[in-house]
Length: 388
Image 1 (cartoon, rainbow, N blue to C red):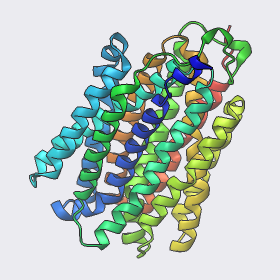
Image 2: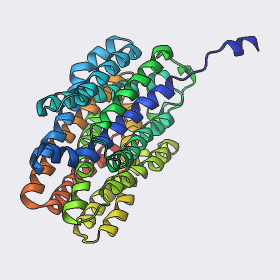
Image 3: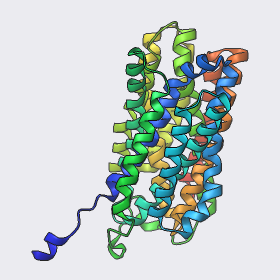
Image 4: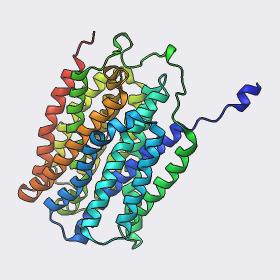
């Protein structure tokens, strides 16, 4: 009894969840603020897409630049350094009006949030080998929860007459709280691996790194995150400029809101990750095409619900399928996938802005839907790999 009373309360997972929540808040907040930022700097649709892509370009670079560093050091140490840099980047944006300083700050926000994302996922998988699969579903739902809350918060303080830079005050505060939390938590293993049962595919656990499987998952995430960013960065513009409606920020929140139950359910039913992935990858382009053809803002608003639910399933399904493919190299695998997400986000967001400028927002949504078919093909191929 005495030994139990001396046991420290384990709160590493809480800190990691908080970090991912803040990352989601940053993404949703930036997406909800893009129209206001564009108006502040007098940007065209194409330039708005490029502004959004700067952060996503940094997301792509982060695992390439920092992946090996994270493998060679304590993940808790890496997280502390990155939170410090994230705080500085938010402060730079907060206290300058210069356009290029804003771009510089956003670049480093993208770099740090991307690295924090993949290192936190790897830290969770390493520290909790018994329950990592289920925890990943909850962890990714925290990202969606952050992205859900952010547009509502942005809409609230903008109505109060506060500037769009308020977002970066909140991000700086979040970075500081997370830094304090990680100081005492450490990243040591919390569970014993000798009794581990993989919830994804116990009969086919790979001890070695399986490159083909990881590459297919990278393709899925590249296209998915490209779609997600292309849609979420411009859905407010779609409602405002095409549908003549003020529902855009609420639609963005609803889109992220339904991701929460979706990702929690994937966590619970991780053994069905393959089937769920195929179903979600089929539903996304179909719903998007229908959405792009609608003239009613109310109908489009409600279509964001099944679209968000389908989108929510992709990330946790991919991460659960990654575990047996990654073997012992969880940081390498998550880093590769994160790089792919950055590439997709960078290219697709800029592409969405370009197509919207030249052919209209409806055409931009249709292009996003068409490209998602490639993700469906990759998903089908990944589920048919026979691991030996």
